[in-house]
Length: 211
Image 1 (cartoon, rainbow, N blue to C red):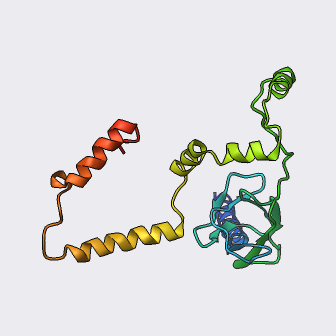
Image 2 (cartoon, rainbow, N blue to C red):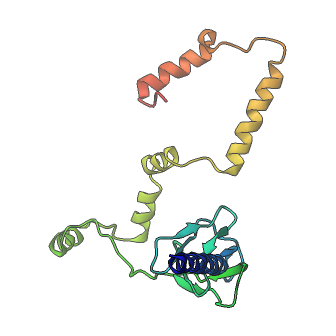
């Protein structure tokens, strides 16, 4: 009976020592892996870069400043992936015991696409018919007259936005109107006979537009 009890104590003691050694070895294998992901050419920090431990479901994503930090093990292969950059890997050295910091460089992935020309014709036959039936001006003078026609110029002017000088003049005119009517009520165009005359004339010639 005494021998069995002694054997039982030896087994428990051995198992405790083994468990302690195993837990310490497991604890030593875990390291805090941190760092920053940057562009290789501009050294600009890259946000939202995905990092994944190879052959596992553990990983993280870099923050707005490109910083990341997660728990890994020595000899782990870390896969880095980001939109517009080439995927690459980094192997954590197997000599580490506590923590490791890294500045990881990413190469841009430039995709060259073939040129695409969009035509308004559904087929080559439709393009041939449109080309053969194209009515072009005979000489430079006819083409110049067509380009400088009053109707063509008005149509182009109506759809053309104001340039920098016109915007500046409009802004200055508004400021001038504010100063001109400072301390009093501005004029009401409903009682302005010239405004009514312009309105009736625009109504007759068809140039009136409601904006």
